[in-house]
Length: 82
Image 1 (cartoon, helix red, strand yellow):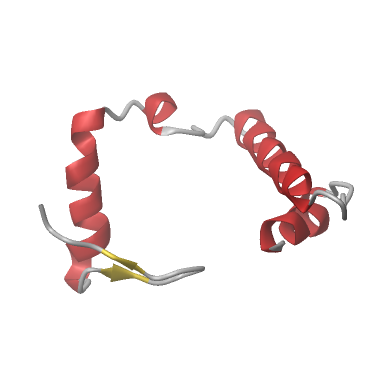
Image 2 (image 1 turned 180 degrees about the horizontal axis):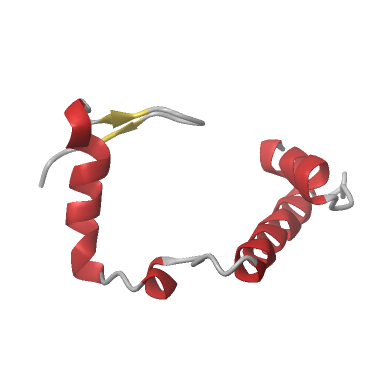
């Protein structure tokens, strides 16, 4: 429901109360169009990153700049070194 509310409030999507997941997906499509319109990459491939870059990205995100291996936000993600 959170993502459906975001879609309505930020992207002006119509709320489908019978199927809020469809509203959330409409919001995701709106975000993708926005990123495309401003010329920002929407995924790793468009960024030029490769599959083998992912472990380094995770290492920097989870442990760079004195981080302790957890990322907090909507949910907390606990990282584990490989």
